Image 1 (cartoon, rainbow, N blue to C red):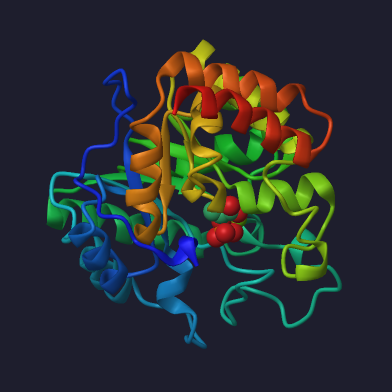
Image 2 (cartoon, protein in one colour):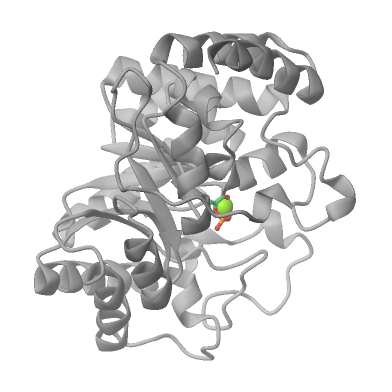
Length: 315
Ligand code: PEP
Ligand code: MG
């Protein structure tokens, strides 16, 4: 299948008019990070730290965490690495962080919400990250998953800054966070759109059910419009808006995301080359036209077709 073809990436994402677009990698640990560095990712846009501890019954010590984080940071010396604090729960339960049973785990105590119950888990992780960043002289940025309110963002930012972590962000993966983007930008330095969960929560469709795949689609106009609202808020605040959900690695969607105001894309390393090749064919004005056409559509199929129509003129 065409999708399985890996196109080489030379390490510098840019539009046809020369405007740079940072293309970053999603990683789950040191092995991924080494692979991402050899695929020329410009940095890491999402380090899913929970992947380091999936097999643990008890919480990792600070030293164990420092070792795990240093393994990733060492693969990207002098490059940006966006580390996500533990996104435990729902599809990625961790025995030491989550309750044995919840009736609706996707709507339960997952991600940043765990800090309500166990703030020490978050504070230990932030301390370990600060130590790892110092040891590697790394450009670490830290962000929280599953934020829905301004208070959550404020509490997270305070904890990060007290731990000595200067660049603080949040993921936008709930409709609430997307709608509050302007207020959230007053608190944090950047945001990253988790389009997998944003689609799940906007369409109210379990992302684990392949039967509902047509609903869990970032091309759904409601999802595109929320992304556009976040892009507008980012432009107004002069702050970066990343995408780190699967949508970021979709070559057909990438120009639309940029046209909606997204400033960097993070994806599985294998997708870097194909996304870079697509972006090299289009300029900023074309991305904007494709984005406006897509968000004006009333169905996902129409959004795809409208964007493709604008983009094919440019190719
Ligand atoms: C997302 O929700 O889009 C995301 C990047 O986070 P995860 O897939 O790990 O939930
Ligand atoms: Mg998510």
